[in-house]
Length: 145
Image (cartoon, rainbow, N blue to C red; front, side):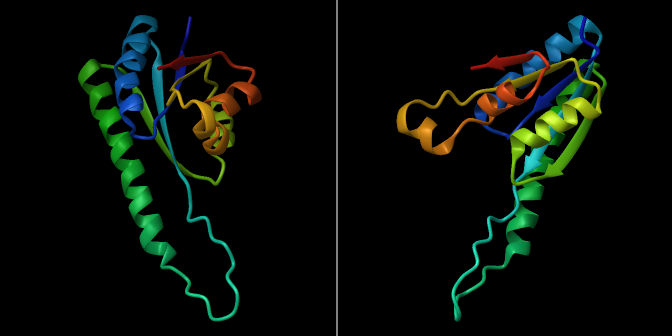
């Protein structure tokens, strides 16, 4: 039923837990897993004259290394489970847009992602990439909590 499953991961405990489900589902369907980690660049805000500009390169190197580490964990687990796995590291200010774009570009027929399950004001202020993906894709999305 599913041939290409997109699995966005941010390295959170919820994403790490969802890795096992993604792998089991891929095994069940004989599917390829496409693991995606989106590194968000430094949110540069122009400062007034005389402001201090942070070293954005250090930030971006660290965030990319963390994203690569998340993908390496999924790739190793997929290899151990005998599941074909492609890893993609993207950089975007808008992770949900990148998730939807990668799913379409790689002909995915399912997006499987973890939800942080934020409630109340945290949900309002932090938003939900999962909700944005649900609102902007025509593909089925399996949300794990």
